[in-house]
Amino acid sequence: MNQNPVEACPRFGSIQHVRPKAILIGATSPKKRFGGEEKSGFRRLDQLAVDECDPAELKPALLEQLVDGFYCDSCGVGFVASGLVRGSDRLAQ
Ligand SMILES: [Zn+2]
Image 1 (cartoon, protein in one colour):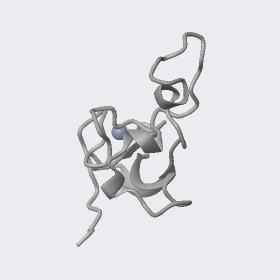
Image 2 (tube, rainbow, N blue to C red; image 1 turned 45 degrees about the vertical axis):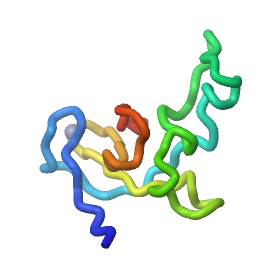
Image 3 (cartoon, rainbow, N blue to C red; image 1 turned 180 degrees about the vertical axis):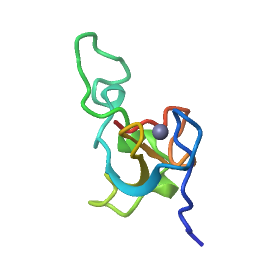
């Protein structure tokens, strides 16, 4: 069922240099941590957190921060499957 096909690099739109990679995401987004507001001056380490993902796509508790993603060797950028994120930002780092 979950074939985890490679998705195109979000920068170049090509699968040429993309390979599957497990990606570690944040436990909590700043938005959730601070009760809905983005604090100015707070630098988040992760661009993506568990509460920003579709719960149905995540692994069980304790493994939920480890998601199936991809890495583009050409750009040096990691990203997650398009179905994972609620919203549009797919860049994981
Ligand atoms: Zn790329």
